[in-house]
Length: 237
Ligand code: ADP
Ligand code: MG
Image (cartoon, rainbow, N blue to C red; front, side, top):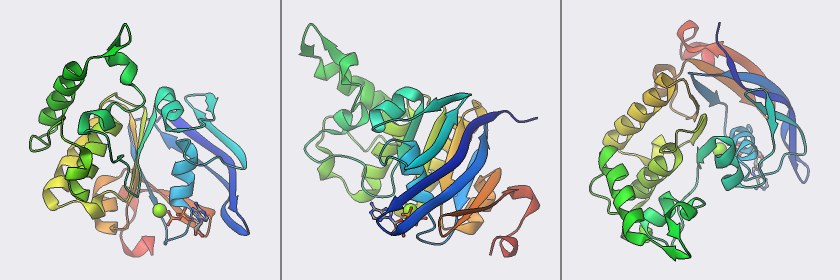
């Protein structure tokens, strides 16, 4: 029996007259890659942005390992064990690569009011190396890198602290084959540790290949959750 990691219970979210999420309920397990699919505008990002504190849901509950969470921002979500690689640009100009990676957790590098930039850069460079992203340097300003490389920085940022849930929202479209392979490796590692990936992608062969479970949303409404092994591309249309 798989153990439940996240219960999504009756979640609703509106933007003006748009009902982006209508009473959405389903469960996500530990140790799985759980894909979210559905046409553009079906509410996938609204759901994951609400889970990670970027949006505030109107009603409903997110229950993580038996306890309700309601993060007001991404740092609170991180502290609850949930991180996200957002669909849009998720790194901030004006900060270095290292500052982006540790954003919200800089305190770890401050002693007696003094920030130890060298220690922060050392740790960020070690992480980048470990992920195989050696060409990215911790002390460079993040805006000197292209969109793909900035997504790679986000992959490090979202995964290095071993979160219980990592949301990956349409990241693969921004990546080259090499970047995708690296992301797939990270996804498998997260699953193997017993943690959970919520994987949003338009690429159905990729979804079928990488996920254990698939939940389908349509126009903000929950449709179904199926095991990836039991379905093919035709069945998902
Ligand atoms: P998906 O990620 O599945 O493509 P979204 O969650 O982005 O879908 O969008 C669901 C609906 O909510 C769409 O109709 C979209 O236009 C609307 N929506 C999403 N975010 C916002 C926002 N910040 N402001 C207004 N409307 C939004
Ligand atoms: Mg989206």
